[in-house]
Length: 238
Image 1 (tube, one colour):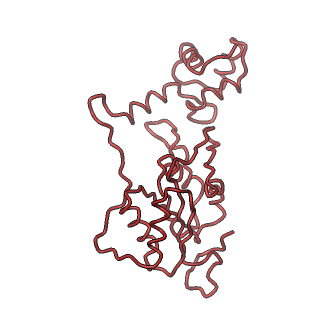
Image 2: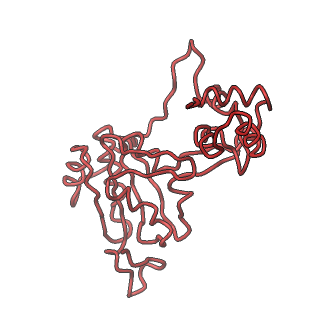
Image 3: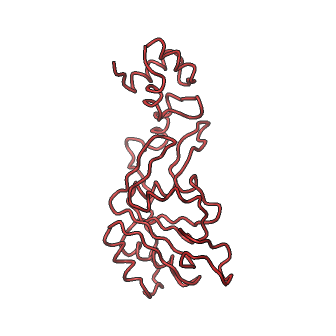
């Protein structure tokens, strides 16, 4: 007999309360003649730590993030502000066309420091009313910074989306700023740079890129490092 997640959660709550351990679940499985792995896979959204599940976590999250019935939901506006002093230059027209197309067309912009690489992307998004999520890359940037991870909220360990997943789900433009400062810790972006989305292995969820999602990266070098020492910390991109 196939047991639904709702039935499992309700039954576990009746026996053990809102918090259960791996031992509790194994005992429940023995009583109900089912498999431990099958049960834990069905209640993965309730997992708050190693061998720990909070069976009311979904209700708490809904209470936290949903507005009261009489109030409209307030969404964060990620469209950059328009700068009236901005002057179009260089490849701005091409950048704007790429963003306007809403196609997945990963773009690499390189040039000397301070020549407006990031600014041009921001203003193109502003003119086109496109959401932009900017991530400043450093040698320390890793999967947790980009994809997301578990965070402590009201005493519970809860999954929190990183900027990359947020951009994927919103269909926003993801700007990887100074990408040539990165280490191999950003290899977690490989499938995303191919336009295939990402599997969040920590919570067992696959996130597909929404329509309009694109990746733009900026750098001071052309991905071959800086032999003359003008840009300290830059690395070879492979």
